[in-house]
Image 1 (tube, helix red, strand yellow):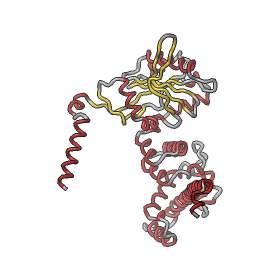
Image 2 (tube, one colour):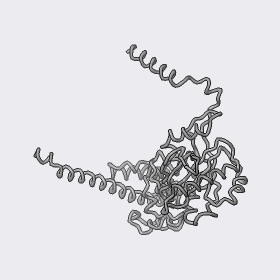
Image 3 (cartoon, rainbow, N blue to C red):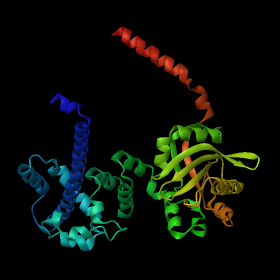
Image 4 (cartoon, rainbow, N blue to C red):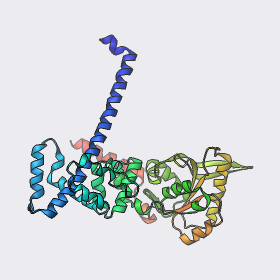
Length: 374
């Protein structure tokens, strides 16, 4: 037996079996979740109908919870609170899917119903199979924080597209992604093919939320650039799916001179380079000229024949949208302009804060004192 354990072929085979079983468990869990949510949706519709059309009293959900929990003691999904959430979830989407929910109200085997496959397909192109594919906790978070179905379905779609965890979904809701996505001022429709333009337009936000960055009032653009790179995980999350970081102060040699872009990315879905220029001031028309120059340089020096046209993104502290539109009017390279927000620390407050070294030293003294007292 010991010889078998040492055999590399055997160990590799067992490793493959373990990996395969884990994948099968994940798929099984995913499928169970989908079927359960199909059942929940139909159950919620029927609860609404029973409460409307019967006189079963105010403790109806309490009794239903008791009966279902006794029948399925290992399932925690039939608590009174969860039944209330199931009802709330189904009611939230019932107006959007009125024709379907009327049929579901009388459909007993909702998990296997052909009707359920039609639900949500009429709204924003979401099919029901995808809709119930995200976890129950995600759905509850959405309906508890969002008040209308259009915005709720936006977050459902983004969760499906990006495979967000619950904490990331909550972050995107709290930073109001729905009202920021696709809001930048761009010239994409005039200079890019429609499919590329629509995709590029959708990925830009306005404003960008860089609240994970703390800067003093008199910070310089290089300070913002440095902080964004230091917090690259949060930065990439805010930029969105598909951005691959290529570097900061990217050197472009043109003639006898060297130029440096602030930040350079490659977008894996758009299949193009994206140059991001940072400005700590209000938008000025001349910023467009410099960014246009960098976009041309990337196209000439770095872009491959298989890459799509390079895109420029200008991030300013604030802007006048009319002025931006006017500045982009005769620009033939794809450029978008957005604002951003970060945490600004007034100089007088910063001056009163202890240096990091002193703070660390003081913390060590406190820890040492605490250890001696034990």
